[in-house]
Image 1 (tube, each protein chain N blue to C red):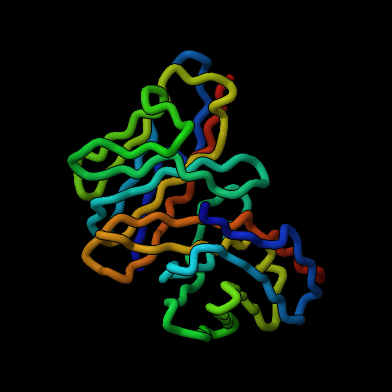
Image 2 (cartoon, each protein chain N blue to C red):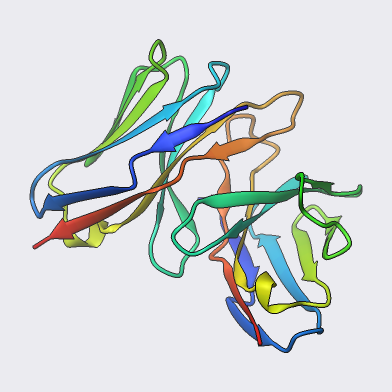
Length: 117
Length: 113
């Protein structure tokens, strides 16, 4: 089945630094990828939709200058948390679907646990 | 706006059946999914159903869809301790190639030995 690879799985960084998270579709092409954030014991919150070759679409309340998204190829999207602060600590999950298959469901990466100290 | 609701907790004994329920508001939803999330991991697609189907069975999993009531359920037969996880339902509707999936709040299933 379709595989989405997300790296790193866990990162600890100091306040004020930036962190990049990668999301790759391994065996399919994805013109669109989605970035979610999940708080402890809560559901997923869609942050943004990443579009290959164009600007990402951000959900209301998500700061686009803080969460930079780049979707440079059909198999890779990156999320950079800039000038991270402790309140950015969370579980970030990416997902993608095979755009060649109309009925294809979303497939998820294994998530990245970000801790900002 | 669009909303997807699930009960937060479910506890069952090993070997019993589990039924996890989900209600949604967007009647135009065409794809309905069930995902499983184990601690510290991403979401694993379990099964999905299209809106033109009423029921889908896949080994121990049975999905029922009541479009009139906008109600989706996931039944796990012979529930095992390894089934303990959070289960999310999600509804989606592709419009012009743009997808937006709305996730439920997740149901935490606890299986008692």
